[in-house]
Image 1 (cartoon, rainbow, N blue to C red):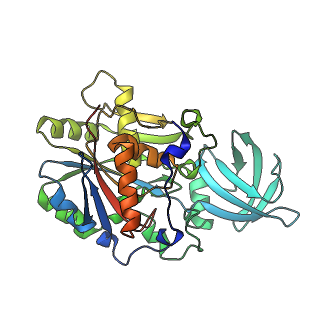
Image 2: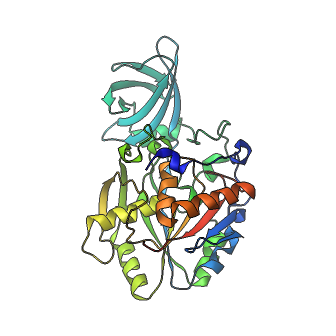
Image 3: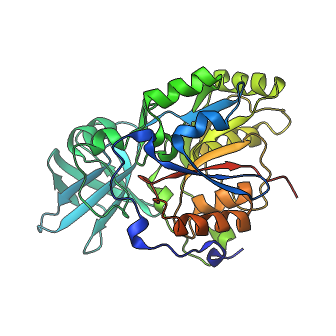
Length: 344
């Protein structure tokens, strides 16, 4: 597979720059297993699910992961937290006009941090306080690079899902951003149960492929947890004939990682660890039946996962339809409800 196999044309004006006034007011393009398309809305999600289905969400909470500092020379440095480490260390992306070197001290609003060493394409840094505490106090909302405006006070709440409870992500699991209390209640009334996993989304979610050969790409590791309660809920749902509905690609990756760690089990077993699972067409899904997901960047690993789930041609045709119908794209945009394609 080549990177260009997942390209599509997107007018820049369709990239959502602001959230809608109401979380659940977005549109939802429904892609059936037979590739049929239907224009719908997020508020119609309960009607499209069944009593006994299990909705699984990612309960990670986004940290204020972006921070601006200055070198002793006065040069600007952008610090983007990737992961908190033990003590006061962290892994981060560092961007500056001139090369970064180990030993550099960078002054920030919260004090000086020290660049310790290179770690792959990231940097290990020493902070004045534990990373989560430090960035939550001094950082700003890490809006994705395609949102071309400064973060606003409202983004602190809107770039965070209502399910968020475990701090550790540096990007939102954006499919969850469509949920508000009213939608959650409507789903419960419908008889749709809910469970959660944790996958702390890393900055690598925005990392473009650097090679035309898709197989050559390696994802940054992300920490994930699938607990016993969620595994039990999946098993109970399966036994009763219900479906597993993943809210977002992060949920798919966490559940399928857990399934791969227990290859002989009918359902995932409790699991936690780091995942680099890169899902591309040809992957055999063992857990998820439906996927609620936003629209993803051309040639991105997330688009490849959706293509693996529902078929590349069907997904790219759905994206072409979404462009024609002026859907809103990416983090603050609209959604798709996708049924898993039958295995070939």
